[in-house]
Image 1 (cartoon, one colour):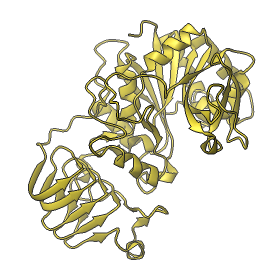
Image 2: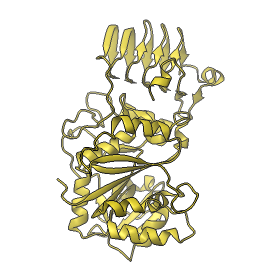
Image 3: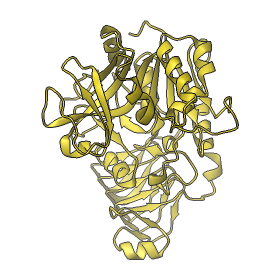
Image 4: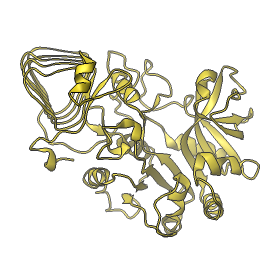
Length: 410
């Protein structure tokens, strides 16, 4: 239980360009995930489960879908003054400009921090799939008397060249920060791995105000990873929190320890869905002690009428009518008609798969109606000629549809 006064700030303004066409009309945090969730639900659930109920969500690009979703699903907790999830578009308090970087987004909203008057500010990203007890991270931050704590994930030295890497000493204090280093520094306790920053931070409130006030005056990218963190070293006590080594309530022994995925491209997005499947999934959504919460949908239970479903997730309102579904994640209200075969797919809400269709490794956005006999994923060149996005990984991606129900549900 967290007793200090903590303000959560979620950075939810990214374009998500590598997730096109799923982000044609929405920001990355608003993209549906896992059958019934949005990507933003994971960080919001982590805050709520950790006892942090005061949260500002900073939005920017293609934000209307996310604003509507948060308004309907997360913003009705205002009966208590410090229990809120509030969306904050760019206020342009520092001039007529959009957010110029992650640090600038917080700088432009320092008035919110001053008004709330927290002891600590947790600045987290909105576009990753994971569970995390932020209370444990805060407890370490307080115990070590850190000014800033960075959540970090051990990665192999070969992978480390693609991340922002922390150099740490044996006490866990950060001594260096390098963006995509050619020769990553290994962890002091593990020569085969390095600490990668997860982009989640806890700041002492006064330190955050000081460093952001100074950063506004500089000509740089105004980014936490590129600018703020490297400049903090030597001036403040900066700690690293080992996310992979932290236990989580309700986690199964077969789950991947420290599961965390940046679903920033189509292949990673699809692979993370596949991680939800199987008798022993890498990331098990069934956890009563640390639930991922989502917007309410008053649909009926799923129905399977004939044929069979194998190793799949079926959300509320799904109807599988004499069809075959294998190793797939099916969103709410989807209808799969007779004779169809859906394999290794992610079908989002309210799609209709017509009779005798065959889908293989397809990611279909919401509200698509596929006519009888549609074949996708079996001939990539034909799919490309038909105007569908074929990812370099071989996945076929179908942009958001235009069914007659699309205007009613975002």
